[in-house]
Amino acid sequence: EKVKHAFESAIYSHYPQAEITEISDYLENLHYDPNDPNCPFDIFGTEWKLTQDQVIPIKTYKDFEHPAAEEKIIDPLQNFFEGMAKMEPHEFFGVQIIIQPLADEEWKPAGEKKVKELIGAEDDHEIKIKDVILKPVEKFSKFSYKEALFGSHVRAPDPQLQKQRTNWLNMTEGEKERVTLIEKKIGKPGYKTKVRFLYMAPKDKFDRGKVYGITGSYRPLGSVMTNKIKPDVSKTWTSVDYIFSKTLEKPYLDWLLAYKKKWIFKGYKEREIHIGLPMFILNTEEIATLYHFPITTKTTTVPTSIERTESKKSQPPVDLPVIEQ
Image (tube, rainbow, N blue to C red; front, side, top):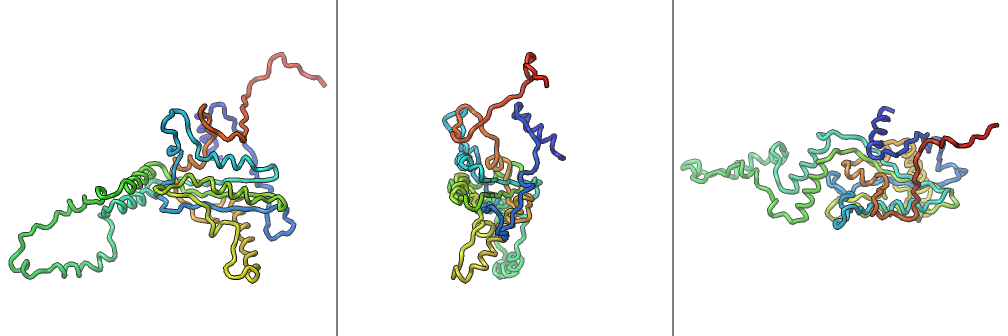
């Protein structure tokens, strides 16, 4: 309610013919208890995480722009939309993205520190414990009675020149590219982000194969040089595997599976950020890659199975016949 008008203004400024309708929460009257044998449906859910340091960016929509054409844009979520279009009326599949704004000083220093680490630059303000402990030993090891008695004609190295030395000239092109990517990421506003998937269907029509197809749709957003976003298969993934004996571990595995399903549903329904994995940081460009309105350029390739409804409101004609009752 506090940002309602700001949100509407942002949408209308880019999409003047858009229609915004306020609706009730689609999960408001839906309840799920994995321990209830009479519960008519089953669920599958997971959260997503980054595989590397969060200051390293994932691939964004700019990496998918066609270099030879001016208008053609390849939507990185095409496979994702295609998978959602195959859902049946009795199935529910939802993607939840929760974001919280961050001040620059809350996360950008970590990115700058990572850059210095990659290029081999020393942080002038950072004092390491090992340097404090080894300082007396270092002084003793450098002591020379000749220098103490006769002095030394060797000029000490200039500390300012030492500070300027980095490994940049000796770095490979790939290492330089990673540094550039980090600098680009911290150059845009950042948000703490949580991403959840939730799939629900009647128990007799539950199709886990569809879920596996969609969970792989974020794979193109990662590469060798960039970060990768992948499902968390260890903590929030709603399936369990036995370690030694499936029969002996069955009571514990049943309890653990019910526990995971209960909390992934609760976190999704309540939009709770404290349930599941810690939030990670994405900038505005990365978030726009994970969630954006349909691209409507003339040369855009879109999945043929997704129907798009074109509508426009206007006043009724003056001579419209009216039925009197």
